[in-house]
Image 1 (cartoon, one colour):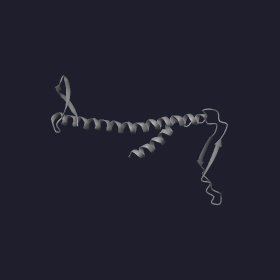
Image 2 (tube, rainbow, N blue to C red; image 1 turned 135 degrees about the vertical axis):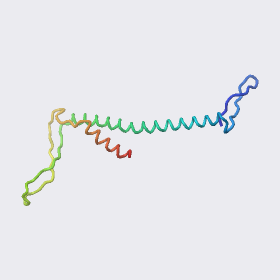
Image 3 (cartoon, one colour; image 1 turned 90 degrees about the vertical axis):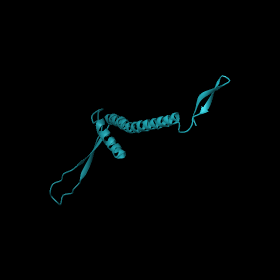
Image 4 (cartoon, rainbow, N blue to C red; image 1 turned 90 degrees about the horizontal axis):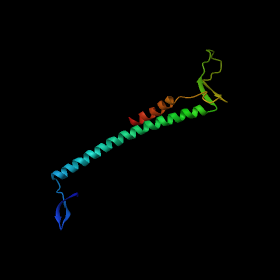
Length: 124
């Protein structure tokens, strides 16, 4: 129960209770409801934005790591001839070693798209 000072005794203000259902009480309840709604909406938006900021930050970090990597691995498909007796390998991998700095850099945008794609699936 909320109180408001309205009466004085011996020169001191004495809090008096606000009657439930009175105009000040209804106004206070309306204000508290509006305030709660305002904060919950902003909190929800901030939480969503935080995920995207994290994805961008992680993407930049991943790009920096690929720029410093001394080796890189690539996997790619192999097209074989039409001869049915020839051995078939659907894909192969290669590792490039002793790379100079910044020789093989995966852009942050690539990592961001991967991370944001996961975030979009979580939001829906």
